[in-house]
Image (cartoon, rainbow, N blue to C red; front, side, top):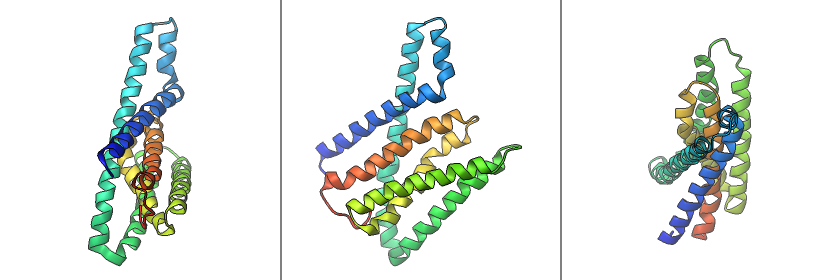
Length: 199
C-alpha cells in the first residue's frame, strides 16, 4: 500500500469515526443536548458537537491502531504457530466472547445475565456478517482471521468503555469502533488490489 492510499484510509476512517460518534451521541447522550436547548445555548451546543466529534476521532484512531497491530500480529501468528494459528484464533474468539458475557455479568450488581448474553450474540452475528463479506470478496480462508479481528481486536479496543460506569459510553464507543473496523477490513483488499488468503 503506497502513502496516498494509506492517507486515504486514515482520513476516511477518521471522518467515519467522527460522524458516527456524533450521530450516536444524539441517541445515547440526548440529555446533554436537551440541557443546551432549554434554553438554547449556542456556544454550549457547539462545544458538545466538537466534543463528540473529537471523541469520535479518538475512537477512530484507536480503531486504526488496533487494525495495524492486528496485521502485524497476524503475520507473527502465522510465522510462530503455522498450521496451529487457525485453532488458536478460534480459541481466542471463543474466550473473548465468554469474557464479554461472564466478566461484565460478574461486575454488575443484581443484574440478569441475559442482557450481556444478547449483546455478545448480536455482536457475534454482526462480526460474522462482516467476516463473510470479507471472505466472499477475497478468499473463504479469510473468514476466521476476519472474525478474529472483528471479535477479539474490537473487544480489546472496547475495554475502556466496558470498565466505565453506565451504559451510554459503552454504546457510544462500540458503534463507531465496529463500523471503523469493518470499514478498514473490507477496504484493505480493495486498496491493495489483492485477493488475500487471510485478512
